[in-house]
Length: 170
Image (cartoon, rainbow, N blue to C red; front, side, top):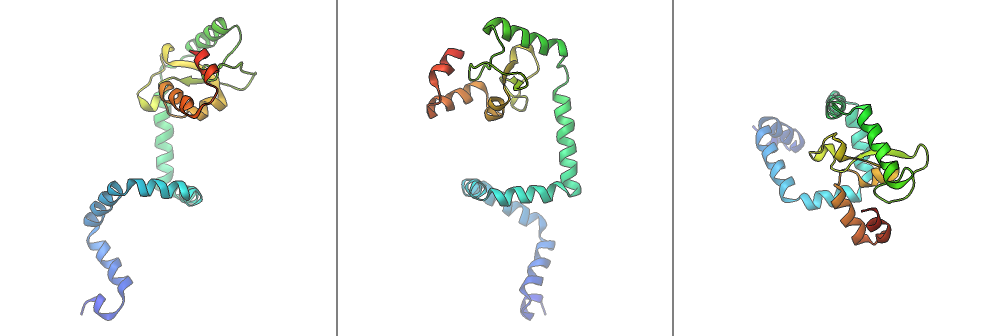
């Protein structure tokens, strides 16, 4: 007599999932691929669930390993970034604008509000070469995120955010 016939459907499903892990994984992968828009929208509509899930996951051994690997990868990406290169970027920014100025919003930067930004982010294939490093407000840099300068700029133009100051910064 099979478990399903006894009326204990939960136990039956648990047993089926254990026996068919590969089939279930393949099915889930296809489902997420076919329903990616739905899934993305659900995540946007339910950020509290996503953040709670991340908090719990980050405490598991797999979550801690992911965090550790991410930190390691980030350190590996910053290899080749020297103090001399960063200093040169700051000095050239001051020479160009007369004062430390954000290359994204073209406004002066107060002490302690600055950050070094990668015009092409490291995660998108950028590097730590002098030509890819720029000075930006910490807030502007965070808003830009992992977008390239061109992607960020086109989004600003479409949303109508101070186009004159953006064009002047070019």
